[in-house]
Image 1: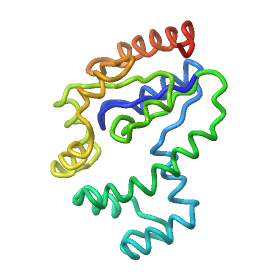
Image 2: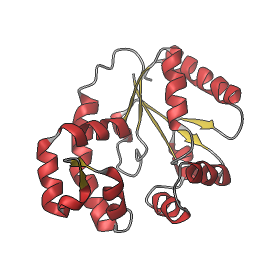
Image 3: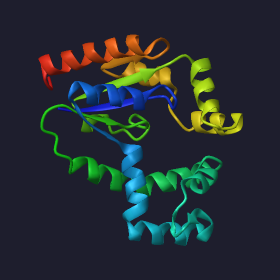
Image 4: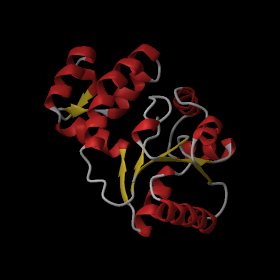
Length: 192
């Protein structure tokens, strides 16, 4: 079964992914897939160089902070980048061995309309103040947080659209319990 994990930025998707992996699920993260594509895809390098020039490269590789600086200030540039990257990421996901339960973190699942690629969806949600605090703790400035949040569907909407919801406002034990319950339901019911 292929399951998508989504949610707002800073909601705790990476932690949930680790918990599901510890329970026995195979896991992947589209952010990691993007990192690998940025490192290895020479055709992509040429496309980025042609579009934005050398300013988005560092040590001959695409520099994500420089790219983020451009795309989160210009909606058209973000749309262009997504049109280039999403097919590459989708190809990697479709090539994964999905024997058993495979959970893939797709932060922009609903924004890019990929939910039909998965049998089930899980959304991680947290209170907006907790979310903001977590993002600022990453070293982001408030304007960066606001720009990233405005580029995503609100996490309330993601929670409403998903098959399962995980609330990540409290302890790691509470988070673990929710993940264990969902993992068991997915194991018991299969892809129906």
